[in-house]
Amino acid sequence: MDVGGTSVRAGVVDERGSVLDTARVGTPSGENALDDAITGVVEELRNRHEVGAVGLAVAAFVRPDRRSVMFAPHLAWRAVPVADRIAKRVGLPVTLEHDANAAAVAEHRFGAGRGSRVAALIALGTGIGAGLLLDGTLFRGAHGVAPELGHLCVVPGGRPCSCGKYGCWERYCSGTALAATAVELLARHPGRSTVLARETAGDPGSVTGRRVAGAARDGDPIAQRAMAELAKWLGEGLALVADVYDPEIVVIAGGVSESATLFLDEAREHYAGAVTGAGHRPLARLRTAQLGDQTAIVGAATLAREEHLRR
Image (cartoon, rainbow, N blue to C red; front, side, top):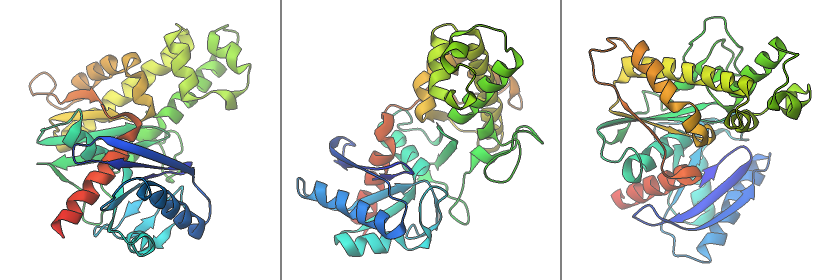
């Protein structure tokens, strides 16, 4: 299950990583209502399939034992033993994991990162999620919250971030960042007649990352400049990631990755030029995720299966 701020999406996944069936429900705001929604989706799928374990992928800080959520910015849980609570309701083993970690596992087992020794996943969506596998094992840090790469500072004193800092990577390289850059460019060139300017008609709130990407495909110069900025900051951030972790492969996932043809080649050039020892060291391969919007579901199920078998 992929438990997000907007919806709870679930899939029945076999040992080959194939999704056999799916179900979905809106994410309620209350804690008990959220537990009810998850339980209901599990029961719906159990009525149609034999299910052995449940994996929950959540955008949250998860304790190292993967039983409790410490904090989830877009969900009702705060210091809640989610895994044990849901397991008691559904009568099945439950494994909890950060959604980017789950996605990283899925791409490593079945997708673009298959077989790589050191693999990073960068999920570009509303913000940036990240996962890192070392010799096939997730790196979670001492307290279960690593790697929060989206909050690396790339522009000291830059755009404010919801985390409380300024200039975080995700404020310059995400779907939200793409829209913010386009709004800034439109304000800087108010008389310029472009597809994006006409579509948004002076309403900054109607500018979205998806709309900017569409305008860039149509040749809109403002949207293309915004996309070039995203490519630049993706490359700069990847250079920092490479300096610290030296990954063999970086998988670009998330909604923004659907527009990778508009920015990935340029990002690769920025990365190659910004990394320490540029021109004198191997570079990570950059690939887009192969499992689409079901990546976290596949990863959560895979981790639940492996945990269940170990028991």
